[in-house]
Amino acid sequence: MKTANFIVVAAVLMVGSCDGGPTPSTGMMEFDGQLADTLVQRQVAFGPRVPGTAAHAEALAWMTAFLETRAEVTEQMPFTHVTQEGETLSLTNVWASFKPEAASRVLVVAHWDTRPVGEKAANVADRDNPIPGANDGASGVAIVLAIADALAERPPEVGVDLLLTDGEDWGHDPVTLATFTPDMFLGARHFAEVRGATYRPLYGILLDLVGDQEPRFPQEGFSRQFAPEVVARVWDLAQELGYGAVFTASPGQPITDDHVPLNEAGIRTINIIDFDYPFWHTPKDTIDKVSSGTLEIVGDVVLTTIRRQGGQ
Ligand SMILES: [Zn+2]
Image 1: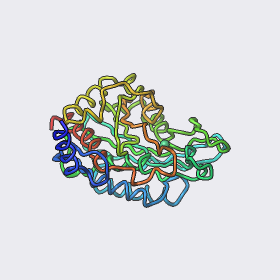
Image 2 (image 1 turned 90 degrees about the vertical axis):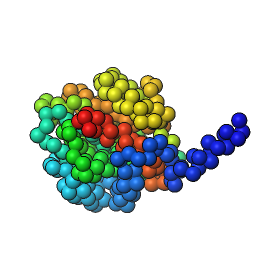
Image 3 (image 1 turned 45 degrees about the vertical axis):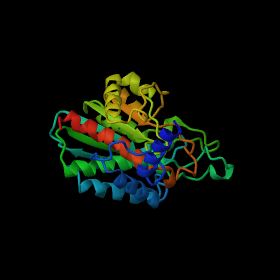
Image 4 (image 1 turned 135 degrees about the horizontal axis):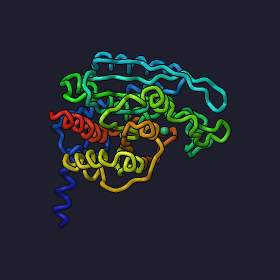
């Protein structure tokens, strides 16, 4: 028994990812976890992507250029939002499409802004400061962009739309810093308002907090409620790919996120999210908390879902 354990440990050490996260079991799949890891680093290097800052504008220009060289259609969707305090925010969703003429489409969503405050910081003095957003923001965007890269290399058979939302993480009480939902999910709400009546993909997949080193994705509660058959499809596929220990077939708590306004508008969308992340909304949400192995596992599952949908 001891010997058997030793052999297993040695095997894991030999193939373990260098950044301390999990090792994708397949290793030979299409999605490039190393590219996604680089794309997280690039975003974090801009600084916090807080609306109204130079880093926010620079990240927007960079993401748009990345998609323009890969997708058939790339579009910035600017809008404004007046907050509870009367501040007007200039925000921009980014949209990219592959095979835009196809009637059957899959939507992939992530938020690209980062939170202006870190209200969960242990140190009170840190709570007024913006968070780096390596996992909360950059991880989901990195997977979306790396999927765009793969689809440019080998075009999908199904239509694919990518939506990077702004203003997901703005809302907070200016005094107590407590979470303030009227000023959250702004990009998803705006999209639902302007496109929700007519845009009908087969389904959407939202990615949030998808990069930490100990990933575990239970089936998020609103996803099970709004789109149970999409949950079943994605989690069954993850199981088939050997990721059943990460995509656990167990009910998770409902988490209000960008998928809620989309579902309310009739866009059936699930949320892949690991809410068990101790660095959430703290200054410690840094690049060292993100694992290329985790990014690859999630990217494998989403990209393979797209490929299967198109019969590829
Ligand atoms: Zn957040």
